[in-house]
Image (cartoon, rainbow, N blue to C red; front, side):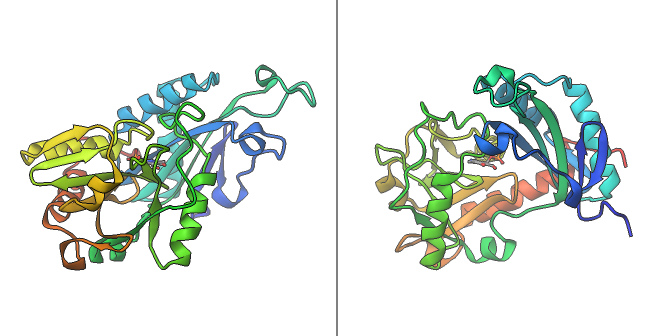
Length: 299
Ligand code: PLP
């Protein structure tokens, strides 16, 4: 049995079984959520859009003023090595940069921390299970939790500040919903734990331009919409507009385009995935299968 079959991590030059990967309890990534990350999918033995994920990761690292020694070429090499070690053909591959541990014990100056990079891989994760995507996701709009304002925590630097999402998720689960999406403080729909949100009305698709991570799957789905002659608008998406949409769907690297059948007590498409969302979901996985935006893992 491959000791990395459940996953592998690269830490400080070593490849470890995922269960043995550790960071210090003093690491600011843990104690202050002072950390950024990215996640690239591996599908059919190939990284999807890897240069785009690396570019976004580098931007996030720069936004947080972190310094890591690894170049993009070195990160690419590390990602290939861990996926190859795991042998996984469909995988969730995370790259992480953390503020690290203060090198002067007890220092409160972020500049005193030893920033570090690590990476890990586990079997492919669906943030919305495929059977839920097939029946249409039930989405709860959190009532008690608003998305952290973007001028407090920049959502475009992918981060672990998930307190707002966790509150929303607990609300959703207690009411029997699959997941949650959060509003901003003006009542516009932002995003959910691991996905962007789209509303379709007629031939026009709307997704938020602000207060959200600019998801790479959001980008892919926008391109797929345009290829199907839909008009795409990136602008604030009021909740009322979401509730009046013909279809609602989500986008995530962990599961592609996901149709939504219910938002709160509003039911869409006879309580089933809408035709456009279903088409986009199929288009996304067909693109992954074709491999034209992918690079094979060097197993
Ligand atoms: N929004 C948040 C908060 C996320 O965590 C994610 C992915 O994890 C997304 C959106 C979707 O981004 P992507 O399509 O790049 O996976």
